[in-house]
Length: 244
Image (cartoon, rainbow, N blue to C red):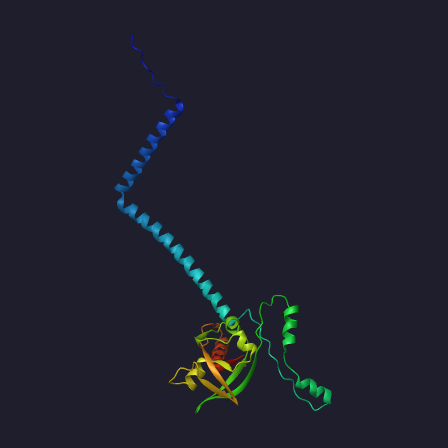
């Protein structure tokens, strides 16, 4: 007697085999349909590609415009508050009042008080501006001499193009060093590099250790007055000398 082996197919395996066969038939039918309508398939694929590319391009343009707007706001210094001391009108009154008027202006004590009482103040940049004639031999420039601190370039987004800015040691030691604007460098040193040279302001001589980059006028608003203010500010920065 010969023993036989009987194979039985379970319902689950039969259903799986049927699903695979149906999937193969569907894929084959789809590929055949695509091949029979090649032009239509190509146009559909191109439409999908162009649609996705246009969406990506619009998003990229929007993000770029947003970034540029934020950069313009940052260059305008909209997160900076400038406090300027204004000399009050002099009046011929009592001696005590004349003494008070002579002591006008902001002091380091005022800066400490602002830091302690005003929330949100991250950093402060004290400074004092006076006008002087600055000389290099026969070359003269009427400029603003700006006494400030080493972190002025970082806060004001106005950086050094050549050389360096003065450091904390030079600030504490009141060193006779200076950083000049690009306009001053061109006027005082038309043919030579100003780095390491000396300039005279009044009776004081200062060694030039850096030249500031031209103040960008790209951070302008749509209003003409804002553009004029920015250009005026850039011209003033070009004829400014920074000292510790």
